[in-house]
Length: 130
Image (cartoon, rainbow, N blue to C red; front, side, top):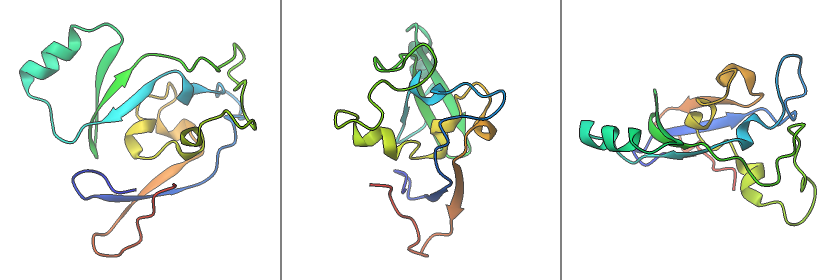
């Protein structure tokens, strides 16, 4: 995947539905993370903090806005009610698309089976999952 600033990442691994000891399934479905094309100003950061359910995430790849809202198909046990059905959006299979999506996981990026690796610029090796 290529970020707005031109950095490219390659995703590896596959979803194991968080079926590992100590990891709750569906963690990634409890929030939405939107990457920002630029860093927020101090005033914008303050404005964001005035909105319950929104927070700023900062990582090596930039900033993102985290929106605390669970998917309506996320069941109490952390599994997806529409997994394997036609109404499940393709985006659910495509996520996580960038390292920032993993920043908000309760167990951190290490708790996800997907990993990201920076691809040197000009290598042409960045491939979007779509």
